[in-house]
Length: 246
Ligand SMILES: Nc1ncnc2c1ncn2[C@@H]1O[C@H](COP(=O)(O)OP(=O)(O)OP(=O)(O)O)[C@@H](O)[C@H]1O
Ligand SMILES: [Mg+2]
Image (tube, rainbow, N blue to C red; front, side, top):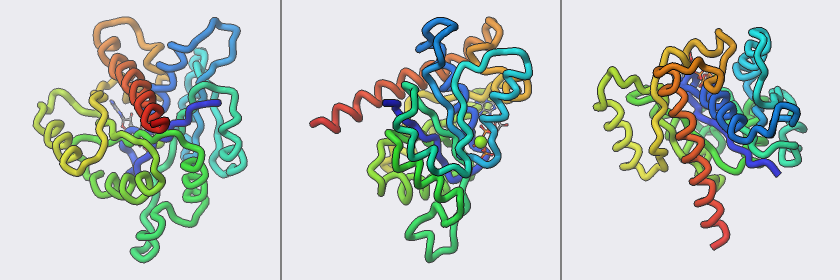
């Protein structure tokens, strides 16, 4: 049975697709079992914009092998309900940002009644955990609060915020104030921070994932964050499982 991780934040453009595709690549490399075996990692997109699907197409267009399976499940709820039976060890789900509803409805269900809301509800029903990307000092704070307090926590799903796209050249002040604000609110925070690298920003256009980056110093630093994130994600998974069985 696959372990299903949903990458979710109400805010758009906050690094969800990047995190899904890069983390999937790292897991695929670690779990690879020779060239002939089918990949045991799957990327599922429920985003009508289909960034992760386009990314996989770009990898192929550039003559490279897509290291994970890809499923475009936007508009296909049945596929999502069957995901628990998918032949994969790890499934990472790329989601769209979602629009807040009018105030009355928002207090009941901020995911909305449209097809995006239906897909998000269906995927959260089968999810094992959620990763919430957040950029330091971003205007994404209110959407992040909605995502955590109105969507994730009421479902009892384990989750963690991952600070993404942090530009080390900006200094640590923004990073540290974001981290302390998250801790003050009692939200779960990953220790791993995904730094900003131009390599990541260009990867989709160049049809590359981080495990295919050239072996130079910058590329090694850039991909290191996703290996660290994968490591922390799996250790947290162990912790969730341990608390579930207590
Ligand atoms: N660590 C990073 N380093 C450099 N650029 C990054 C990094 N993370 C994300 N980006 C860039 O930020 C932009 C938004 O990222 P991405 O598309 O992953 O966000 P998203 O949350 O999936 O957006 P959407 O809501 O539109 O689906 C992209 O141009 C991406 O290349
Ligand atoms: Mg996206």
